[in-house]
Image 1 (spheres, rainbow, N blue to C red):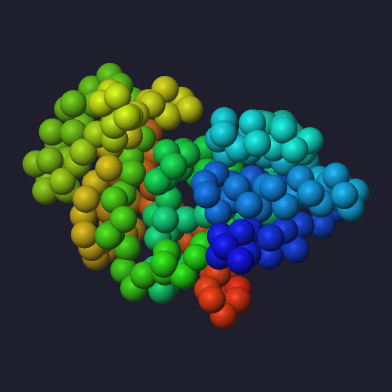
Image 2 (tube, one colour):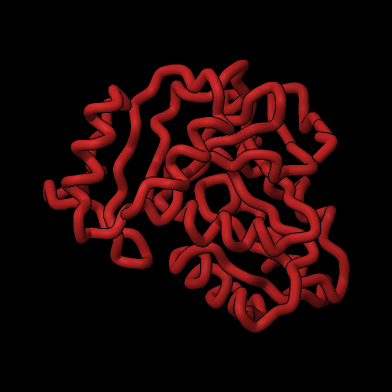
Length: 225
């Protein structure tokens, strides 16, 4: 079986009736949402979904999953999402799908967060995957210049036609090609202070459970956060 599909289906076992569930974005989360749709339609599962992107919202609506916005719920019981890199100490990079702003908002309002990945996403240290930043258009070239001066090797993410990629909030994405991030917490604090950066893709101390798909099956790792 496809490893992403395997962990997506496994993650659905964490979902119980009457939960408010955060629905992640990306190629692995896609299979989790598909399985939730099947459980609702075939087994009568009762949940409310909160989506992390327009793409996931379209998918969930097509499957008949009842939805509310993040502002319509007091708290989310459990969010299941993918990740682009996860280090040995459970820190993560997300945003390869340009949804990290919404994903972080949903994660921050969740009692529990589960990440689902295939084994290729597990690393010793973060940084090989480019770190995404969502930036507003106004002053984005100035932000880019500052990041370049710091040696962070920024690039604007482009669409197929060569124009700047636009997020669901109509912002740009700047990817930092860092190689290795020696101190993710210090970098996160630095980026948090930079005016014009709406959100970065460092997800630190946010996940409780990681499901890792491999040829041997699904490995479950629990953090202490």
